[in-house]
Amino acid sequence: MTTVLDAIIEGVREDLTSRMGRTSLETIRAQAASRPPALDAHHALSGGRDDAAGVRIIAEVKRSSPSKGALADIPNPAALAAAYQAGGASIISVLTESRRFGGSLTDLECVRGAVDIPVLRKDFMVEEYQFHEARAYGADLVLLIVAALDDVQLREFLILTHELGMNALVEAHTVEEIERAAAVGARIVGVNVRNLKTLDVNVDHYSAMAHHLPQEVVRVAESGVAGPDQVLDYARQGADAVLVGEALVKHGNPTAAVRSFRSASLAKEAQ
Ligand SMILES: O=C(O)c1ccccc1NCC(=O)[C@H](O)[C@H](O)COP(=O)(O)O
Image (cartoon, rainbow, N blue to C red; front, side, top):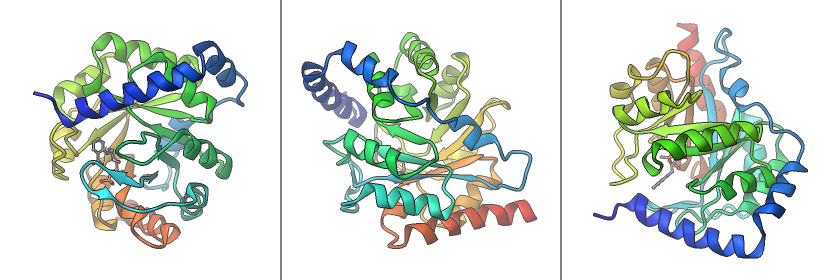
C-alpha cells in the first residue's frame, strides 16, 4: 500500500530530477564548499544540559502541510525566523519541500541570512545531491527520516552529513527506528509523534518511546505542540529540545510564542 510518506517522496524525487538537470552535482558541490562552515547544531541543542537553559526550541517555518493544508502565508520567512530567534529559539527549521509544504531552498537561504543560530533543512533527504544542496543554501543541520531510508542509506547519509560539517536530526517513530538510528551512531534523535504513514498525531507517543532512546543522544520531541503545557510535558519526559511548527506559524506573535515555550521549560528546571 502506498503511504503518505511514499507519495511525498515520489514528488520530492521528481522535483529533484529537474533541479539536477539545471545544476550539476559538481556545481552544487562547489557551491557547498564555498560556504562558510556550518554552525554547530549539536552544541546549540546540548550545550545547556548542565545549566538552567531548559528545553531548546526548534522553531519551524511551515506554510502548509499534508495533514492540515494551508497554515500561514509567511511572505517573509526571514522576518519570521528573526522573530523566532528574538524569542529564544535555538534552531530554525525550514521546510524546503514545495508541493505539500509550500517551502523552497530560497526560504532556506533567506532564513540563513537573517539569523545567527543553526538552520535545519527539513525535507525528505533521499539522494546525495540534496546534502550538498542543503549546505550550498546554508543549512547547518539536515533531517534524516529513518522510515524513508534503508540502513545503508542511513549510515552513508549520516557520514556524508558529518563530512560536510553538518549535523543530522535523525527522526524515528517506532522502537525499531530508534534502534536503527542508534546503530548508525546518530547523535541527535527525534521522536516524531506524527506517524508519517498515516498522519495520526499522538502526543503520548513520546513517553512510550523516550526510554528507548540511548542515554548519550540529544533527544528531540517533534510535532503536536499546541502550547506551553505540551512543551513542559515533553520536557518532563526528558526531551532536550522540542520541534514546533503549526502552533508558532499560527500564533500571531512568534517572538512571544517562542518565549512562552522557553519559559514553560524553565519552570520545570526551577522545580
Ligand atoms: O505536518 C505534516 O502534516 C507532515 C506530514 C507528512 C510528513 C511530515 C509532516 N510534517 C513534518 C513535521 O514533522 C512537522 O512539520 C514538525 O514536526 C512540526 O509539527 P507541528 O508542530 O505539529 O506542526
